[in-house]
Length: 497
Image 1: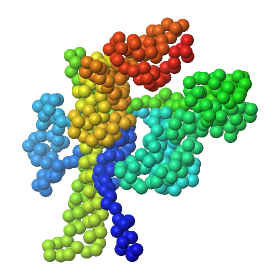
Image 2: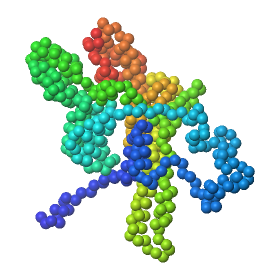
Image 3: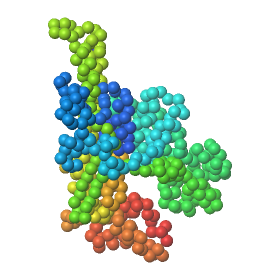
Image 4: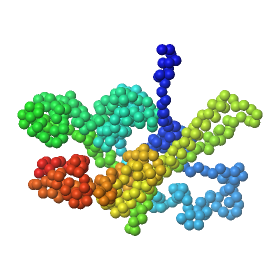
């Protein structure tokens, strides 16, 4: 077979979705919560001299310089210093930017929500990465993986899914094997168990750390490891007798081994926050939703600490200065200077557009959530939450589902009834035989009420709970009842005595 034939056989048509740098920037900013977006803006201001903060001053003609203006006012018998309030008939006419100056009393200044000054769980893990020898690429991948950990400190996403995310949203081509190597480094960080893919692996990592530090009696090392590897399912169901029989352990040894495992922490991410104080868990809401006595709802985006941004006028002036005269060709130095200035100005404008796009996307998404969950925002009753999934909000806002997912991740809303993560408002639905749609959260609430009100000497079985739910109008199967019960961390009937 000749070389041409071999080339034809190896050719394949492949469609690859690529994002422009501007789209990648917009995605990254969209994912940032209120506390981090301000830091990102400040960092960009320091990095790009073409980006400036504050309201952009309008251009003045040469005839209207400030000194000449004050001189004209003085000649007319007025004050030499311009009094801005003179141009406004009432306080309501004063623009918002003027109220920000020092002439306005503190009582008239807009109220700001205090920001939590503490190091986040994410930052603490990043700091620990500095103790390990890593390449710049590995560090970049590690930071992305740390950012993908859930609230418990576990990495629930598969490495293949993370590899796809990196390729699409960050433009980084990383194999699963490469991510696995980086993940093994993360699993060496404190607290033990972070970065595990499952609760079982989380406990195994902690157990191995304790064994290495000789914190577990030597006679219990093998039994504890075997319980987690060979009898993990029985351990989660508290079948102690079955574990002892299967591993041929005495009741005393099995009991001691189980007690050692119970000392491990199933939520290492939460434990780190608690050990360093409650103030580390302070939340800065991204949205402020207020409901008045008449049920009217108003929403504002909590971006009061973000400065106004504009492209430096000085850079525009320098661009004009670098342009050659009529009929002249630009020199090499002029071309390089103009290219540098244009790149900085384009980057500044692109960043401004991305910030505005973030604000618009957050606003329309939150407005859609309020409309879909209006009864809750008016009453504050969790049972009033309607079935709502990402697709419902995406259809209402005409945005992509992945965009809604990024908005709802790590974002919080402050309401009259407390502060809630946006994920709180998303829940699956269940359709009854009559075609009525009920939320899964509503069913779980009633299930929890039934169990809390049961006779503890004769706890309700899943079959009995299933009958009670059917009487209430929730005709769900027994296995569904068992699934909801497990999601509520409620044990089976025999363990509730």
